[in-house]
Image (tube, rainbow, N blue to C red; front, side, top):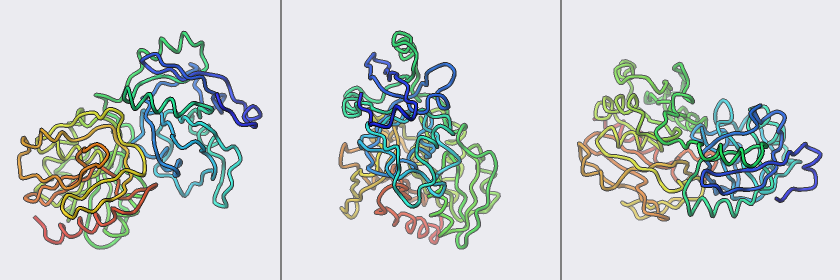
Length: 375
């Protein structure tokens, strides 16, 4: 276990991270008194993120609900946190795992160190972990459920065996807003579904359109009653398969109004039109994933955060003409689909980034163009 010299002063407690396959990692837990529940452990599905910066935006992305985030970058906490960089109302990750934590942030924007934010949100910061070993294990075995805590190792091993992943669980209802919000703006009227929408996406949309964000359980009829020029299906956490309420709404909207989906919204749109989805071995999490545009041949560097993808083989079951528009250059996974007869398209990645590159901003222009043409 690797700890820097100030960890003991901050009250690090010795503990373990144990995965469901029995693999064990000795760690320290920072902020134990505030962040760890009285049970002495936290259960999560552990995934790794390859971004070099933007840890605050990552941890406040609702798409990480139910997951423990392992950062591959070895130094986390360097620049602290600021309220301006929250992507949602709080931290949705269940645990944060790092190699070397910087206890004294150095940045003029910093309002507090990362561990204070996590303590206030009740999220344990796991420090001193061998994140290289852990990442290699997750790459080999796939994303695994597990626990992190201070209880005796034997108890944690038993708890890890029964820990759950996000498979088959509706994670969206726990992160979506309960009421519609009119964000103002001007131009085309867009209604965006909140499946776990990020603040940076809201910012991008309201800078271009007149925007209303609606809860995840909003029906197609309720959206159509708002008379939108376009509908946006947002990112969100977990497995798309149990979200029948969302696919029902999307099925009633695609073809009736120009539509754009990203991440979970991309998967849900495909499922609503007849395709199926599957779980990737360890998902795509980070701000440096290369994606090829099938039409132009250009390569975008993209921000991604998802564990599921659309099955290429299932596209023959889609009820309308469908085109594969983008492909992941790391593993060949479908990254974009277009439904030209329905004035609809979607991408698996995050064009708003936050954090990440801005290569994909052109997709907002594409959305405006299809709204101009209409159905």
